[in-house]
Each structure stands twice: as structure tokens, then as C-alpha cells.
Image (cartoon, rainbow, N blue to C red; front, side):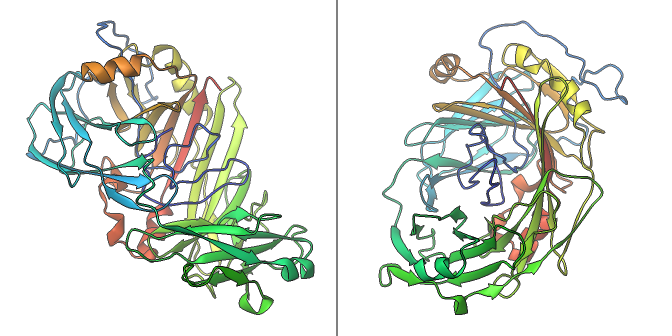
Length: 455
């Protein structure tokens, strides 16, 4: 599923995900995200159904008006960019189109961004919902829609297939001697396990800098210490790195305090450029989770839950905690069965009917929902607050025809907390202005639950 996610890259070993590729949820991804919903358009059908999705404090289950704190600003500025699929290079995306919809989803206007990927436009007082879509040069036809969008600036990032913006080099890791010394250890280079292959590809960032090569060593027996090393090189001048134990710093075990028994825990580092890099030490009880303060100043711990619920729904949750003085704290954030019960029928009605919903009061401090479908050719994301109505959003005719030709087997519904008072929370925050400390504090307030139907 397409996710508009502010944070960065890290990977669960069993539900592998690269968050720099923001559209990989449907590949068994385990994706922390910000408020994003996928909604479909059902063409010219006038059929509507009110599904009772109310929480206990909403007896009629129907919310026909916008959220009480919703207000439409006078102008809207959309800033569209694209990130190259196989590297960290970003560039303005000049082929994006901005759609405005009224409260019923009817199309009001369609405008293109300029060569810098930017559009500033007066916003009509009835332009309640906003969509931005792109196709040319992208990995998928991609639509981002935002219900009841009340911000003045909307940043959008797509995934591009263009490789000319990438500048990547291969580096060979000479690890033979060290592997012989540490036969029970797993070797992780830039988040990937390397048992046999010892080649790493690194790509220049948008500012032209080469990223560090981060190496982690974990004892599979969980008896001995874990270690880390960080290599900063110019791969155009140095193409081979020889691992030596003297380059490594011994890690420190974290203390995990949790009022809920998650299925697994891991840790990650927060580095310059606002990236999150997995340390890739997965542990089911939290006793063997590591930090490396000699090499990295900011760490977060991540907890995950995975199960098939009584109704057959596939359920996942993710929580984050900033590591402070070697300690990470987790609480019970879950709505779980109550959440799943509210969305069980959505796969039958989604894309064909109007859905009135209310997810308030579920889970801990939730701030928005996300509903999503995608396949290899098409992805549509729609963000929304906790209470509202999902209408059929009208698309331009050619785009509507392409959408209706797609087949989607699964529907994923997210319930999200991002620690923000804003309707769309972190989506309105410019992450590039954050320090690594501010960044780790922001993600520590972030948790989500997701139910996948049809898997």
C-alpha cells in the first residue's frame, strides 16, 4: 500500500520493508506511516449505504458534516517531488496534477504543477478534499487524496523509475578474516544480511554526499555482545573495505519496559538526513536488543504485534519508543478486535458506496485512519481524520477508466497515532528542519494498527 510516511528506512526481518520505497506494504510489508487512506471511486453510481461503524459514544454511526475543527484556508500550495526507486535522489516532479473536490467528492478543478513541481492556487470555499496524481516516469500510476484537508501546504512524494538521477557505486567488504574469528555472528551491512555476498551499493544523497556504510555484528546465540562500525568513504576512490575488529565498538543491551506483550522487538538508529536504519536484531522478549552510543547518538526501539484475528482478519501493529539512558518504554495502544469488527465489511462496500465512519475512542491517542489498495500498476491513497465520510472521489475520465480496469485483491485499514494535534499531523511538518533528536522524539509518538482483509 502507498503510504505517505515522514520517517525513514528500517526493516523487520520477518515482514521486510524498505520505507524509502513507500509503496511496498502489499509485499508483506510492515509499514509505519503517517495519516494516509486509500479510497476508490465508483464511477457514476449514485448508490449510497450508511454502514454503522460508530464507536460506543456515537449512537447513530453517521457523520455527514466535516470534523468540527475543519476550516478551508484561502490558498493551497502543493509541492510535488519524486524519489528515485533505487537510490536516495529526489527531484521536483513536474508531471503532477492537482484535483479539488467538494464535500460529496465531485470534481471542482484540475491544475498542473510547474516545472519545479509546485502549484499555488486560490482554494474555493467548497474545495473540501484534495487529490494529487502522477503517472509519467513513475513506478505506478499514483493518486494521493486528502479528505477534509485544512493545511495551506501539501508536500507529495512519488516513486520514480528514472535512473539518471542516481549516482551509485559498489563497495566490496573484505570480511573473510573477521567471519572466521566470529563464526556464530550474523553480519549486517546497511540493513542487509550478508552471509555470502559481500558487495554493498551506496548512492549519493540529493546533496551529493556519500552515506556511511554501517556494519552490525550480532551473535546468533544471543550470548555474546553485538558490535557496530561506521565507515565513511568516497567509493570512487576506495572500493574495498577490510573489516577489522579494532574498527568496532561494543554495544549495550537495552532495557525494554512494556505493559503489553508484543510479539517482537528491535532497535534502530536515527542518523543525519533524517533516516532510520535498522540494527536488525529481532528479539521476541526484548532481552537482546542493542544500542551503540559510541557510534550513534540517537536510537529508537520498535515493537510489533502480528496475528490472525478470530474473524480471519490479518492484524499487525507497530509502536515506537525513543531510547533514553538505555531504556525504551511501551504501553498497550491496541484496539485490535474492536477495530477489526468495524471494518470487516469494508471490502464488500469500498469503492462502490459512501461510507460514514467513526473510529474515535479506539486504541491509544489515535489521530487518523488510512485505507488502502494497490497493485503493481496502480496505487490510490486517501488521508482522513478519525471521523468522517468516505465518498466516491470523481476523477478525470481517462484516469477513472484506468482505475476501473484494475484488480485489487486486498483492502488494508490503518488506525494511526502520530502525537500531533493537527488533523494530518506530521504530514504538515517539514522533516528537513528537524534535528536527529527532534526526529527521534517525533517518531516515538507514532504507532499504528492495520487490519488487512482478503489476504
